[in-house]
Amino acid sequence: AQTVTQSQPEMSVQEAETVTLSCTYDTSESDYYLFWYKQPPSRQMILVIRQEAYKQQNATENRFSVNFQKAAKSFSLKISDSQLGDAAMYFCAYRRSGSSNTGKLIFGQGTTLQVKP
Amino acid sequence: NAGVTQTPKFQVLKTGQSMTLQCAQDMNHNSMYWYRQDPGMGLRLIYYSASEGTTDKGEVPNGYNVSRLNKREFSLRLESAAPSQTSVYFCASSEGTGVIYEQYFGPGTRLTVT
Image (tube, rainbow over all chains, first blue to last red; front, side):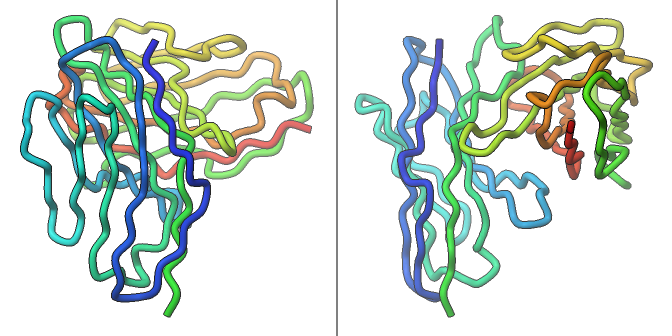
């Protein structure tokens, strides 16, 4: 069974600085997708960024980028130029690809990010 | 365009009571999901419906039932609520189960069972 682990329950960053959130996962599959979701205090789940496992190039979305290390099964999220609005809980998630895919997302435990002004 | 809506937003139940959580989407999506979120455990899949007329168990289905009423609506029922079902429940929908399809989440229902 696939598992996703976020070992940092809480992180903090100064406004305008850079922070990296860690995520590791375990799977025996070669084809899958990885995601980072943001959950602000409103509880709304917002997709931040996604990475296809078959792509070597790391995904980037504006100030958000990932460091995907497939062999190490590591998928970290880097937030550059942190803003107060980035304060939220961040979830790493895994989703299998292929014909047996049910659409199920497997989530990590979450990391609460505090942004200090 | 409301996206995914859930009712109610908050609910308190006594042990043994029953209730149904409602979910509706207006994006003409085929697939719908129910997750629960517990502190320190992330979100876990309870049930999902890959398409209208089908439902399947997820990771933690015990104590729950679902109904895919039509393409828009997917309800989650607790027949006899237990304190262990205290959680935040999220409904999500996607165009299909294929991994290219993004899942869109509702605002969640906070349920407390006393």
